[in-house]
Length: 398
View 1 (cartoon, rainbow, N blue to C red):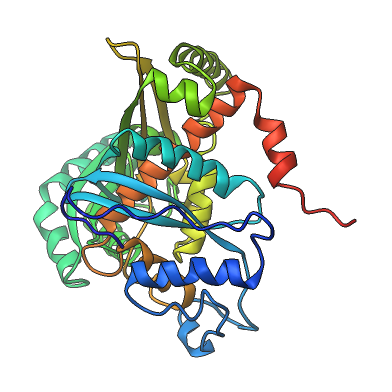
View 2 (cartoon, rainbow, N blue to C red):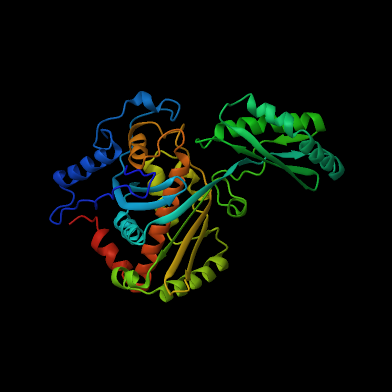
């Protein structure tokens, strides 16, 4: 990776292409060699070497092999993050033709504009047990007890992990039930297993101490489903990215104007409000799914990750301001499938491997979503969407 902890880092070259046959072994080999140079290590599994089946232990049962999904690199993407400026090639696993090209186009505009500013806050991984009581008065007493016993619950979590911690306990009384919102900090892991175990122990403890009739650990189950809490409260990490793109660049590269982009975004917002969606972006699910899959994440969390907003507006100078907000990123750079095979190699390419990597990974994801949404919105306003898919997305037998 052209790392970059400083804005003086050398820019990455454009991704090499072969106009005659870009899928020829020589063309693919040149790009792989470039990725190995940037990652600073060999990438044998991306080049096709088999993964040791033993590496999948703990991640899957009844193993028969490994799925093969094409991986392309988009970019370079330039991100001004909280740790400095970094430039990366973004690995994307997908079978949708034109997708990598679309994201690369938006990344080029962002790079020409000085890079996307991005930042990540830890919203915390929430769990939501529900406890049942005889009546509302008993439920109210249990809610008060949950608040009073916060320190005891912290000790329970501390006995389970040295990396995670209990951040907050928020009880909500609904009739004769208590929805207990527990928020955990999980370090650089998603931390679902730890949080689920801790939630079980805490809910059982409260249920025993307060005389609950029943305890449902997965009571209000927001896990891996679109939900309004993800949009408002966030879950996991909250990431944002923004950029200002000049009117001149849009006219030359995108064949559109800031006014056209702002107008289409306003119309789309009406459509989103009418359908009641939690995803107010145009193709966040595309880019997120491709990067999450390449980097060994639990892709089922896409339903929560692809929650958020795209904001397009005019600056005082008449240029385009663009930002995305992703309040519910469920990602990790340690644990799960992040440390094996192609996933480990793709995270190495991003420079986001292991402890300390999840913040930068979130910044890259937010900037990637921003690039893809800018590119697609421009294609819509310029009337180029169908033509691009016809040119790049054709995979039909002749």
